[in-house]
Amino acid sequence: MQEAVADHDRKLKELIDRCRAKHIKLNPNKIELKKTSMPYIGHILTYDGVQADPAKVQAILEMKQPTYVAAVRRILGTVNYLAKFLPHLSQVSEPLRQLTKKNQPFDWDKSHDAAFTQIKKWITEPPVLKYYESTKPLIIQCDASDHGLGAALIQEGKPVAFASRALTHAEIQYAQIEKEL
Image (cartoon, rainbow, N blue to C red; front, side, top):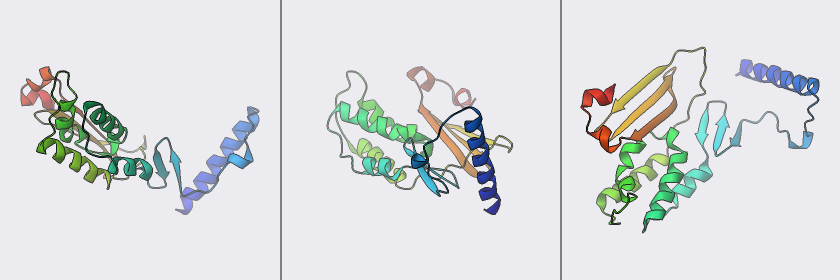
């Protein structure tokens, strides 16, 4: 930790020196130093990595069961903002995405309720994503199911990012070996 503080101080001094050299003025009233965490575009940056912003998580937890298509789209859009914290999101959210298809009747059933509940459960305990370090080796884990693809980027045994997406109608028809490629 001591090395990290010294490294931080060195980089901060370099930044200030560069700003001075380029005649960039910094407002001392807007600078916060030696913070252990800080919000940044809907995430919380900490020494350990990136976390989901508790305010975003709370907003999802407070969402009521949707009763029309636009509400489902709003939920999916909000949840998608935190997708990098949620492995297998595309697979679990598949029933909800089906409700948003054109000419699809809005019939909320147990599968939709299960997906909505599972997403809320996952979002209450999102992992801390490690910062990517270009000098360290990476492990990419990939998987394909009948209706989706998923991947995890791992460094030093900790997740850096998760990704998933639903398969298109054409891709669903592929053989499993083709999906895994």
